[in-house]
Image 1 (cartoon, rainbow, N blue to C red):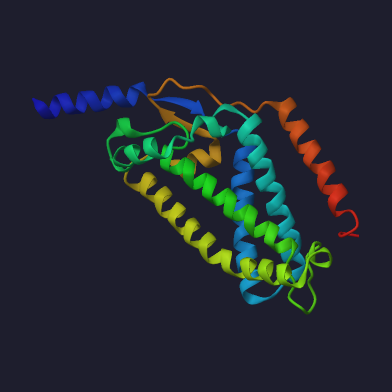
Image 2 (image 1 turned 45 degrees about the vertical axis):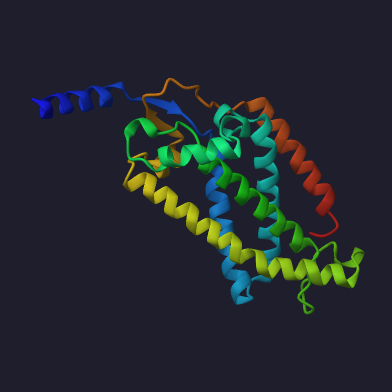
Length: 235
């Protein structure tokens, strides 16, 4: 009897699931573009090859991170930091729930722990990108800030640029482990949702449609700023 009730409850729960648009197209493009660029930057930086493209990829990462930070303020509902950043105390209290395999512990967008992972990744990528602007390899490549910095600062930036990737890769591996745990154990299908933008949930939550006008303003503004900053470098 208990088994029958359990199967009925599971069936009802499954029938209650509804698709919610969680990640707008810009977040998905940002996510997969960043993954590819990080892979290329790690490979080219480690092997010391394709350094001209390494520099261009670094600029692209800075542009993407800048976009994500602005979009975290002005973007679609689930992209905004206010939708997933919780206080440190609330985040600590949420850890058992985040790790639980109970279906009602699923979150529509980022869970509180995942939210802080997003912040950590953005900050370390921003620091890595900025440090690259003041880095030199003393052979071919000088960052655009090298000529304006004291020698000690250039050495410091160069040291950061070679040290931060270790912490970045550690965060990326932790992020991947969490994603696979949520996919394989909790059955949240995070990878699928980052491809399609849709999650199936019992939570009656807001959909995240792309606000086109804001998107065009943000990308247009960043494009003009990037062109102005780099027009003398990329000729």
